[in-house]
Every structure is written in C-alpha cells, then in structure tokens.
Amino acid sequence: MKSVTAATWLNDIRAITFDVQGTCVDFYQPILRAGEAINRAKGLTLDWAALSTEWRNLYRVALDDVITGKRAWIRVDRIYREALDALLERRSLSPAFTTAERDELNAVWSKLDAWPDSVEGLSRLRERFVTSTLSNAGMAAVIAVVKHARLPFDAVLTAELARSYKPSPAVYQLAVDDLGFPAHQILMVACHKYDLKAARAFGMRTAFVARPLEFGPTARPDVEPEPWFDLYANSFTDLADALLRG
Image (cartoon, rainbow, N blue to C red):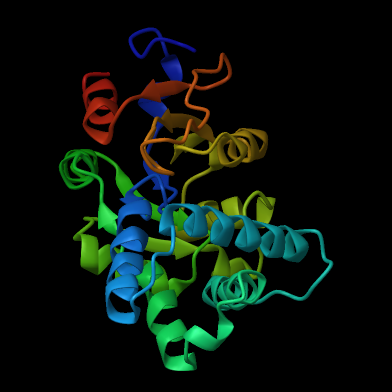
C-alpha cells in the first residue's frame, strides 16, 4: 500500500463511492433483533445468527447467477425474498411464517444501522469530495437505508441503474457517467475485497475499510491489508483523517 503522504494520485481524487451493506451499515444486529422479536412472538428458539449467514449465502448464489447470465436480472429485494423462502423451506419452517410476516422480515434490509463512525466520517469527507453510494442493493432499499441511518451522501447510485451487479464493470461505469469524473479520479470504498478488485481493474482508486464485526462477533472475515489497496483504514473517521490531511 502507498502511504498517503507519498501518493501523488491523492490530489486527483474528486469523488468517493461507497459500498453500503457491511461497509456503511451493520446488517447483522438488525437481523438478530428482528429474529429475536419473531422468536418471542412465536415461542421459537431459532438461531438467527446461523440463519442470517445461511440467508446471505443463498442470496449470494442467486446474485452470482444473475451476474453470470444463468438467470435474468431481478432486484435485490426480490432475491433476498426468494432466498428467505428457500431458507424457510430448507429448515422446515415454511408453515410458521405467513406471506406478510416474510415480507416484514425481508424489509429489515431497508432498516439497517450505521456503524458508529459512518456519519461522522462521511460528513467530513463530503466537505471536500463528492460522495455517493455504489451498492448492489436496489434504489428504493438504499434510499431507505440512507434515510434511516442518516448517511450524508451527495448522490445515491446502485447497480439497479445498470441492470447488473458488482463486480460487473457496468456498475462502476455508473459512477463515471453520473458523477462526471473519470475513473482514476474516483475512490471506491468497501470492506469487501472482490468489490475493490473489480473497481481497481476498472481504473478506480481503492480504499479498504475493515469491518471485523460485519458477520457478528464470532465470524472471522478477511480484513487483512493487501499490497494492491491504495488505502487501508479501520473506520470512516480513520479514512477521513488520511484523505483530508493529504
């Protein structure tokens, strides 16, 4: 990784795009809270930490099928809803959940909580840079999350506008087309390495922000630095410190 003080590219950055789920907001705790409320209401003892992991895995398979062309493009909220149905069927829980209850549980993806450093870090970065989401979630969901979590973005961009999903280059092209800057003047921020690899291949600069609690306290996500990152930070405030002193 290049140090900020020695990085001549830093002065060229005009815009910063952010992954949302996991990077800007915490989805693990909101899902657990929703699951615990369901357990209390229904007298169940379901392990929602395990269920949330399984739900996300089913979502990822469906998302990859869209990216590879195995199935037609559909919005992420529908993918999550289909994955929830598959999860309940797999766990023999289908009879315990009505359609309305499934819809309500699926809506948790529109009510995610900001990480403690997100609002402050974004507010500071917005003073110098154009800031935008660049998420795989749908437009309606990201707008709802941004409002719920009070995230101070200048723009909301999602893969839905490209009818594709990251890591497709078409999604990163959205940032160039809609923010009005060439790729090398845009910094992509994410806590997922696959996202940053694709952004780097597209020509964007990259900043990894570690979110070790993304999947809960017992998970061990890959948060190790890589030599190809342009920047590595432990929080959005850490990232703001690095970028704003450059």
